[in-house]
Length: 605
Image (cartoon, rainbow, N blue to C red; front, side, top):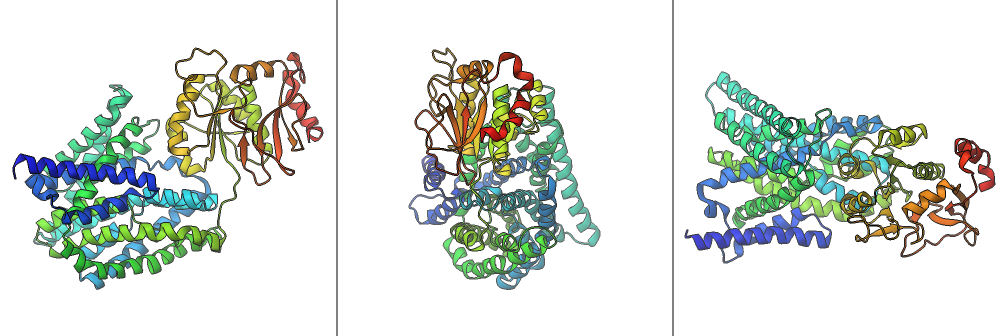
């Protein structure tokens, strides 16, 4: 091809990929479905979009490199330190029992309906065992099931990403090794594939760790460094042994995510790099599937989907949750939540090409099968999960779970008062003495850096519904409010800066600023020093004279803050969180404040 048609084809793939992701965001649907459907339809366009034609012999290598980066990024989110308590027991049981059930039944269905050999069917079953938080998370966020059930399903999907990919690669290496002559040679080939992949992953982990810890590479460069190391390790492993690089990328992601006392920086920039790469990869790979291949596979694929949805998933959920304290209705809902996601599609794209090149004809059916399962299961579960949750009565109570950020005395007292009203309060502060005071106040303290491990990664896992940014650093509050709108939504609030403040950004960033114009961060602190205190009272017809209304906690547990744009409405049965008049406590009474409040708690109500 001449240069111009190639450039037109590449440009069209890129524009369509990014356009699908933008449109998916506006429609609030997973971009994966739009990408695959658009790729399927691309063959009808007058412009040649077949990437195998556009890139020639380099196309398989480009797919492998892109898949390695995407799998690495997916594994970075699996931080097992965040999985604890009884949820850990349920999730590990569900995964350890559910995965063999899903892989086994998926393989049987693929073998019987598509005529695959045992090895190919096992590969298909392993690929189709991966669900993924990229599709499960948005469905759960919209449906809002009970908190514990939500945590279990989200964590299950997070673990199934790397487990499904690793099982698929093991099956893939087994298929490759089966072409060797002699049992000893087959075992050697298989062991070499695993050994090179694991060794490469360990080496790549060491390089990224050294870049962050020893070389102190700036945060802004850590994402490009990680991409370079992942692609370099993948290429090096493939040079030593064909197709061993993908396993190295997965090992790298899991290892770096779980290294003690090491935090992978640059995750947001990493997402910025990975998202367009993911779109281009999936759309272009889908464009390589001819309509004839889809026509040959779609009917058996529907049979495989029926087995996965109606038999494998309910059986896996039932067996995996037996003996746990999930209710019967929660177990039934868990049996109706297994959409296939990004990792399944990417893994299928990465392994089918090498198998087809080795002359395994049935392997060409794995890619359209995986894509069709993904395209069908995401809308199926997305459209029916809400009705299923309502019929089974597993919806989450609307009670808020606020993350209160700050360590000033009035902030800690606010957290205590909200906790007395039955809210599950999580707190964070940057200074160690403030963190000690939070612990002494018997409040739950979030570990780690705020903008990475607490909210961006944990908001989905811990059920945070509201963020209150109340530190003494106005610019930090303003910038954090902008960053945290991505994982938490519009329920992010910050205390206002003092009038006439000369901060860098705080006076100029809008957003949801707490309380009235006269009640900013400095006036709150000064009034608190003069004896004002945060108290709670049952909601009456009006706010008591001399008091400032800060929050309303409704009878159903919803936290409703006062913001500058409006004050919340309240009715009988709600509770007001108020700032009392100054002088309630003298400056010398700070030490006895807690005891006096406890003694007068009945009077406040």
